[in-house]
Image 1 (tube, rainbow, N blue to C red):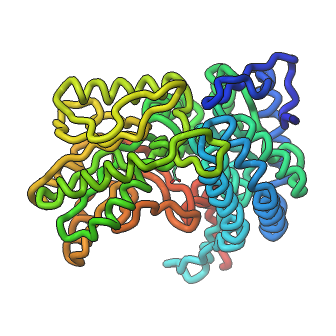
Image 2 (cartoon, protein in one colour):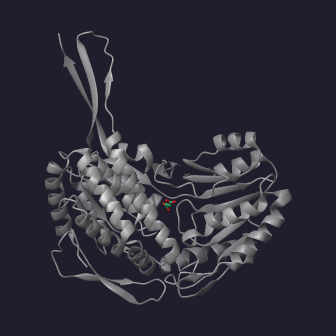
Image 3 (tube, helix red, strand yellow):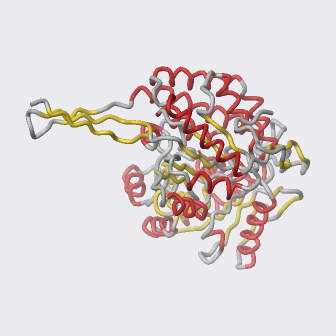
Length: 467
Ligand code: SIN
């Protein structure tokens, strides 16, 4: 294994597989000194990288995409081993991750400037874009490849250099991607990976250094707030993709079987460890019982097992902390009167049975905090107004979903939901071409599409007096 920032010490930390509990790798435990070295190298590389043509950057990103696709199976295996995502789903993540590189290989060429008509006939007003500068990226373990490429792709396309602090639970995928960037011909130090068991002091180095011009983070709202504070003294650009608490509104005009299949896909992908996974399923009363029964039957059929087995649909939770949170939410709900229609308990190791809960009340923890596990609470509602009010009754605003065949309702409810992403009869709206990001305490900034690259660009205005 290679590390792009050569460690200043030989120290390593153990990487433990969430499914077997075995140590699967020794990962370089990089220090504050390594973080300082990374900044020096990134700043130096930026001076020449920013001068390259977008066509040059585009070719390199396209090659990077091709190499990711060449190595889908190997990267999927790394993901499955280090964080427990079932390998078939992990292969899907690798392709999704590569699609951000492909998209930004193209989008690099579409960063147009503007000539603005002036009130003075003797003036030309020209607006262009420049890279924001060296970037520090902090990515989570739940999508070790995709959450990284949707930062690396636009940053490199825009002409920024990037230092990626990989999640402690999933460093192998990040290290592999850095190798592929080098193989693609990416210039040294344009993309550096830092691995550390103690991210707080290394992150402080990045946050204190004014030469790091941007922080981009995907993770919890709590950490996002801290990073925003730390970014203030050096006025870094900040993008934060934070927690969610997604509602799914199923109206009584829905295609019920399809709605069940969609909620299943939305809730149980990655064992529920996805920021945009549904956390609260609201079903109109007339169809609530039938929906709950069908969802429970489908959830009970999900194949739980070894993430390296191609037929597995649900793997383990990522670590003990993750499992404890799921247990706490379910125990709290059961103690307050909820019923586990299926599942409801840990099944050994870091596994938790796919669970559907009914008889839910608003005071339950699961209705307030992101569970990040395979648990679907189902709540009956009577009116559209009641459902929208309940859906919006949260500090989060990342993704919300609805299922209806009524066109007027579809537009009305989509407009009323206070969320950055709406899935209308669509449980998986995430895609490289579209903007991903939230409102309220789910953060700010957008990743993906033509919006994603703007986060890595500064506007430059040139006023020319031709008198
Ligand atoms: C996330 O969990 O933050 C991302 C999931 C996705 O891209 O759909």
